[in-house]
Length: 161
Image (cartoon, rainbow, N blue to C red; front, side, top):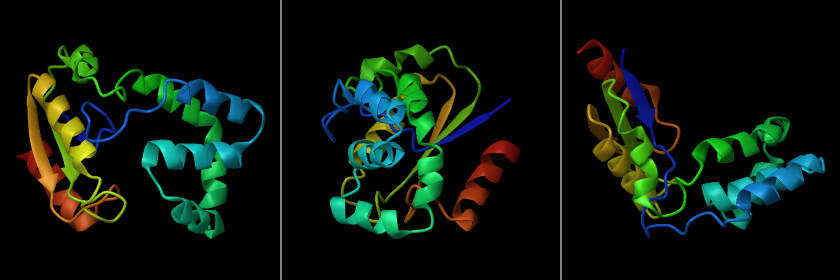
């Protein structure tokens, strides 16, 4: 009966470059060729915006094998996102018919800093603008993985309030 979203990854303005037009096909080629590591790196670089040194650190972390194991699902993410990463806010118009009360949230940080977060805020704002029954909330000091003690109260207030 209600929906909550956190950081919809829409690129709706010039706060971040759009994904390249050949991004989806190139990602699918990497996956089809069995190059899961390259697919994850490409995704992390282009979509997430991780710097090269961040990728090097991630490759050494225990999470990297898990990312590689789901690399085959990344082309599905791109298919679902469609043209919502094209810097065109009208790409979100398809959701004007979603009338369920929706909480659209974001944090104030991106990749650990406030720098570069503008595109997440713009995407969340644009989505909240097109949803007829949307509430908008920003969680101060939170990144893409918000802390439970910050996220849970926001969700309880929305779903139970």
